[in-house]
Image 1 (tube, one colour):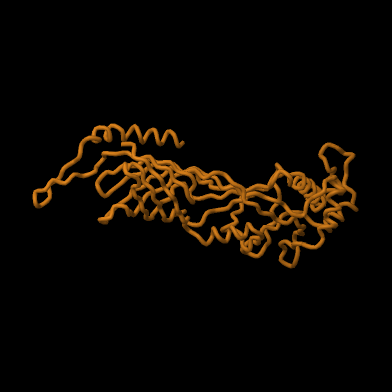
Image 2 (tube, rainbow, N blue to C red; image 1 turned 30 degrees about the vertical axis):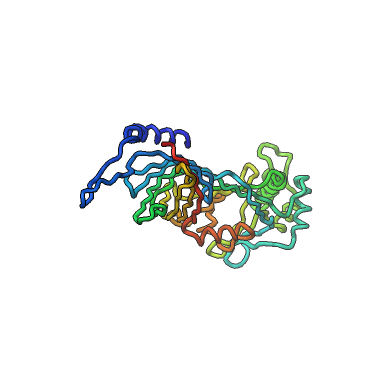
Length: 333
């Protein structure tokens, strides 16, 4: 995406810039003095680094007080560790039904799961969050003051709606597969079908014993207590059919930006300049964090546990994304 965008921008701007490179528009002041204007007579290439990632852009002045910038930003992928506890829970508990979460019987539950699956199940599921995204950006810098080094900026970012993903580590896959196998046994026992149906359809020799069914029902199902739904029910997340626990962070693809900045030429040639930009990117509301089960942890769940809960609280607090970027630019002509 980044190379075609920059190439297209260069093709569009080049004829105008080349024709105007050696031409300065001239206006007459009230006293008849001719004043040269820097309009479409140079092109800068800039490299930025900051909270929106690594950026590359082209910029040019359209008047002596307005500058256009267009380019791309890329946030390199990096890992953020987090974890959840595996617990058992029982359905239809209490006079109004619902779930009952059991935190203290994991040892017995672990023993039963090992007997069924021959896999030692870890009590905690280690996960990694990985922010990573591309953005096209278009900015308009306005320099209304006599000191043209300072500017205010309005523009937008356009990119993928998915800005981060999270999933369990590879080391946790055996445990999560064991959880799925165990829950298959539990669901079969809870349904009561073991009395007259084989565990595997078409294999009449494989029936679940009433003793095993009673143990499974006593221990309960197994899941990850992520948090609680707004009606008070605990959200017990089960691994997906592929044995994975996943989530993704989603925002609007179009994200307006508003900020200010500073840019100053350095060196005798005046070709090199350094500066910064600071502002806010508008998400369009709080981002969503959606699990593989389709549950939004920001809007559907409260009291999210562990470090994930800390991240969810931060995301829910900030409706905008603070942006600070440092930029170095070189004047091509």
